[in-house]
Amino acid sequence: MPSKRRLTVAVLFGGRSGEHEVSLRSALAVISAMDRQRYEAVPIAITRSGRWELCRDALSMLERAAPRLAGLGRAGIPVCLLPYPARGKLATVANGAVSLGRSSLGGAFPGRIDVAFVLVHGTYGEDGTLQGLLELSALPYVGAGVLGSAVGMDKDVQKRLLREAGIPVVPYRALTRDQHRRDSALCARHGAELGYPVYVKPNGLGSSIGVSRVASARGLGRAVAEAFRYDLKVLLEAACEGREIECAVLGNREPQASVPGEIVLGRGRAFYSYASKYLAPAGATTRIPAALTPRQTARVRELAVAAFRALELRGMARVDFLAAPDLSRLFVSEVNTIPGFTPISMYPKLWQASGLPLERLIDRLIQLALEEHRERAQRSFVYLGRNRPRAGSR
Ligand SMILES: Nc1ncnc2c1ncn2[C@@H]1O[C@H](COP(=O)(O)OP(=O)(O)O)[C@@H](O)[C@H]1O
Ligand SMILES: [Mg+2]
Image (cartoon, rainbow, N blue to C red; front, side, top):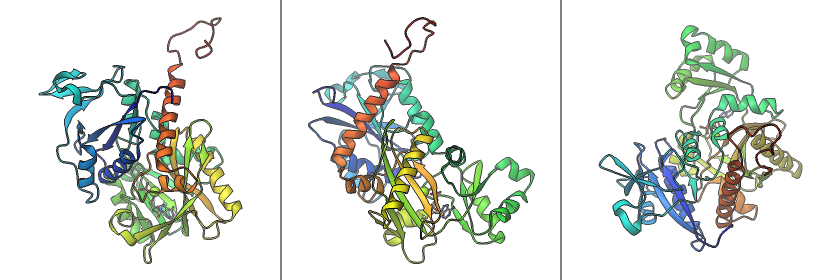
């Protein structure tokens, strides 16, 4: 750490997506595990309607709300970040007026934020939009940048980049709402080409929302209509059923992979649905490390790092795989740039099993955020002339 002063870490959680409640559990776990000697946590709840509220008493509020997966009530002082470098200062919002700094709040208000730890999953948290605001306000933040976050939430663009890097992805077709309106039989042709069963899913969501397994052409229309409720683009994917392996990646330009883990579905569960993830505790369990040969383990880790690099990710990501039971087929399914940090979440558990407990994982992520920010701050945005030293070499 560069200084002895405690770093002020804004922990952003909640948010407008369907994963609001999961985010509360992640925030509770991260804030509880943060080393108080080194960090001062500044918890900022983003409500379902998108307001930012500084919580004075976040831990007890989260302890009440998180186990029941309840939403947040009014959490605290309305705050916001300004879209320009304001020395890490939060602005307060009162009666429609924005003012920078302490205003009338005195000591309860943090002087400045050193780094942001975003734990908002899905749309408006994980997709590059929030990262864009953090860039504009010149705050270092944990995790992927604008580009990596956006690509991480766009399954179609993500697969194209992975394929270009020689990383195996399942055969799939993308279908836009416009194409579907113009030619409603196109999806049936896609289905026939891919062969059934196919998985139909919205291009840009998470938590298995809108995902269907379609056994034959008969069920396709309904599944496509369901997925189009959530997005303007829908994917049809050939099925790769058998095993679901996950691997955690940590680092910036020299990323490291954890031991792989495995999702084991409960009996009678066709796939890792929203219900198996959050509603039915017995819907799925995890096996860490995954039951793989050393050679299979090495392959998974190598592909996880390759995917992280191909998608230009930073900080952290969980890379999910679909595989045949004997791993004769192994595909990168998707990446998650803000993985869950709940006590049962794979990302922290995989690092724990790899020798990095949560408290040290948090240290490392904050350090990586500061390093990345320093690297990026060295860029010049003005023309320096041909014969002058290049930006960064001064
Ligand atoms: N092509 C596929 N073959 C087999 N199972 C799939 C396929 N696509 C999705 N699934 C199942 O659906 C789940 C959710 O799909 P996924 O693409 O991971 O969406 P999300 O981003 O919502 O997590 C996966 O965990 C897996 O169980
Ligand atoms: Mg998934």
